[in-house]
Image 1 (cartoon, helix red, strand yellow):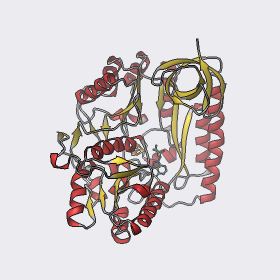
Image 2 (cartoon, rainbow, N blue to C red; image 1 turned 180 degrees about the vertical axis):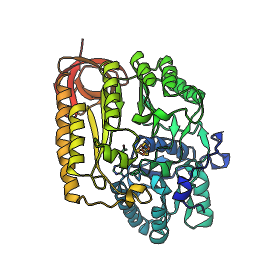
Image 3 (cartoon, rainbow, N blue to C red; image 1 turned 60 degrees about the vertical axis):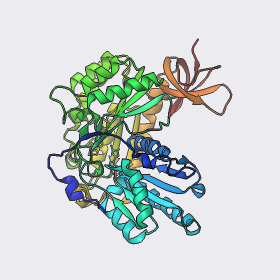
Image 4 (spheres, rainbow, N blue to C red; image 1 turned 135 degrees about the horizontal axis):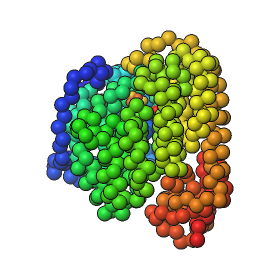
Length: 470
Ligand code: 5AD
Ligand code: SF4
């Protein structure tokens, strides 16, 4: 048994990890042939991508997948810790699984992902959820075949969670959700330790993948017909800092652009690590999409300082405008937290003013959720729940008007769209533009997975309508 420990996760020791190639012990191959797994994924793209690896591993063991929990032999929850409601959803689903297990004694129930890394969650499961068979952490989830076997032999709750970062595993099996768009990890973990954020504890310290491994993966994806890669990391702009002296996200983006993959995206960016060279490279290559996610979190310098964000509103705005000037047609989206402990009306108004200046193309807005073990959770908070809800409502009203306003400007314009599927209506397709906008459009015999020019005929808050341009 290995239990999570936030003190270890926080400690500043230089981490030592090895790069290893994934190898499945042949004794596990098809061991569970005929068994079905219900895999539920919560949270961010990183978790979605981990689930693609989990699927790949379980398929080698012989599992198939079902959307119906009642049919499953294994219920596996890939969980998220970012806000309390993510916790609540996962515990709700565990309750459903428990109910099924009452009449299906052989059902195995497992939990992985960020919640597995939290002491408080693991303690709750150990004391209150004996029906959970195993918990496996973010640093060792690839060890699933071992934990499943151990669980059969020992018939007790298995908890294998490491607070120190594990090895960096290359060539993991994978079953990707899309045939055209692929996630590619470039950096794991985060060293920023923003005071509200649990990610550095659940995902560990910053560890970059070697550039050769990233480029090899992308070249394979090109051969397989992929049209778009999203370079993933909690803070992609810190790429390379732990590995190289003179190779950063800018150089990586340039090397990926030269592979000629039609579309490159990357997320998430921290303003602190975004430099001019990166902006120049994004502007230079047509296959790097002009769409950047640049979380601001707050427009108040006082709150930004309390959040430990390492930039001021003025510095953020300088970067924002530089991007808009240097990258043609660039759209910028953001994340904003309202109701951080002690946020006053005046702090909140500064956030609204910043939003009015930036007129974002998209914004993910949240009410602050205290995460046990993070520094912000210890701050006293005199903002009521009602006030926080009102602020969120007001903020959403304003950001939504800009989404619509920006979309309106595209009416009559031609935009390239990567076609992802057919909608329920006849001859109607959908896909995403270069600037990451959802486009529903009319066409005849359009090839899924191709990039087509679409003329925009109408704009909504969250999407655009159009037809294939002849
Ligand atoms: N409460 C609310 N929102 C949070 N985020 C991260 N931690 C918290 C928290 N404790 C938001 C941030 C981040 C996004 C992924 O989630 O805005 O950018
Ligand atoms: Fe969390 Fe992002 Fe800050 Fe890292 S940079 S601590 S992931 S909010």
